[in-house]
Amino acid sequence: MGVEAIGLLAARLADREDPVREAVALTLGRLGGQQARQVLEERLPVEERPLVREALQRGLTLAEP
Image (cartoon, rainbow, N blue to C red; front, top):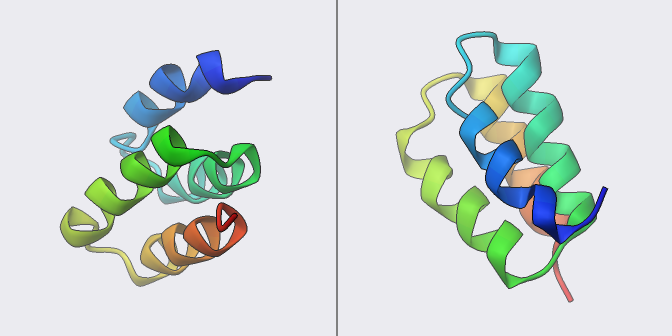
């Protein structure tokens, strides 16, 4: 999976299932890059579930250069 998948993954951050959003957040972090970071940063303020917020934070940490 490459950076071309970021758009598809970003759409899954709105999935109704928490485990899906968690997995996507970590996957985006592993992909890294500015586009993945932006997607994670945009989702963080609107995510209400603590475990998903934690996964978003971990994803941002993984995406660090």
